[in-house]
Image (cartoon, rainbow, N blue to C red):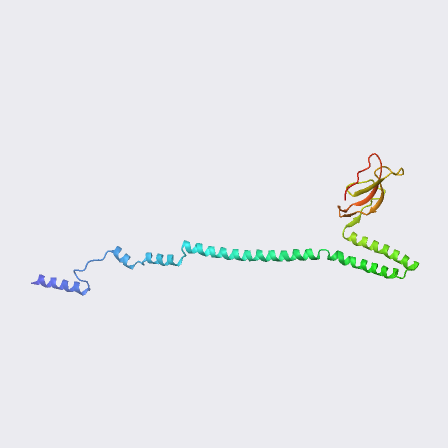
Length: 211
């Protein structure tokens, strides 16, 4: 009887601990699995926030299209601005030259008005006025790098002279410019107009150049 009483006391102690004698111990690996966060779900959430390759490509394409439209607009504006500037340049390229020629016209008008009287003194004034006007025109041309060609009594040079006739002259060597019908001019180092000249005849006299 004493032994049975002891067994009952031990069973009561086990039930007091709150554990059923039939309860099974849970493995530690299963407990850690239950407590561990669902990492697969987190990775899926992060992956959903990132753009797909197609979305990234579409975004890049939109950016390149915007840059292309801006560059095309800037190029079109540049072309229009350049066209306007070229048009203005063609229209007003000779503005400075013409402005410098206006005083020359004024002097010619004054000379014409003086010569209208018809007396000798007036005619002399006209001659002097025209000569001054000629010198003023030469100054204007010089400012634009235009200068006359010195041809008279110079050796004939087909690069700068145009022979319109030939004459015999024992006082000058052959192929020498005897007369100058029309002055020639250079602009910088380029021929603007050849001088029309008469050349002395000789065995090596140049042939006449056609205009």
